[in-house]
Amino acid sequence: MSDLTDYTQRRARRDPEFAEGLETGYRAFKIGALLRKARERSGLTQEAVAERLRTKKSAISRIECHAGDIRVSTLERYAEAIGWDLSLELRPAAGARRSRSLKKRADRTA
Image (tube, rainbow, N blue to C red; front, side, top):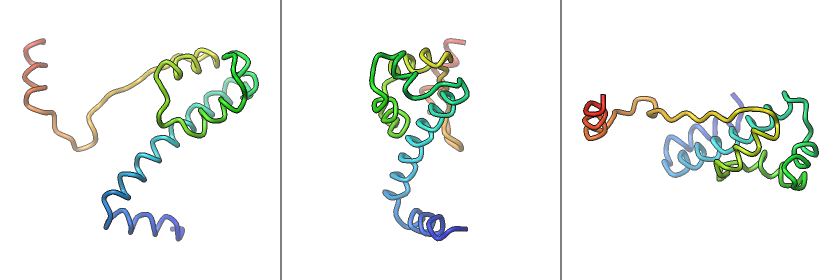
């Protein structure tokens, strides 16, 4: 285990705010990494995507590096520009219980 990994794990155990910030940052990083990987699998450069979206390469770089607060409409346009479909998934967090009111509403609509 690296010193950085060891440090972040120890700090996250004793500091809930740090742990939450770490998770939030990781989610933002993961979105950007997924966008970059999809673009690369499509055989496109950042310049080519920028041209298709009528923007600058720096804007595409920013999207891929800082995608945490990206709008769904931007994700849709990006996906279309690289020839992909956008699919979003909403699911309960691991170990989370459904609220009773949500369960009741789901039962009534079934």
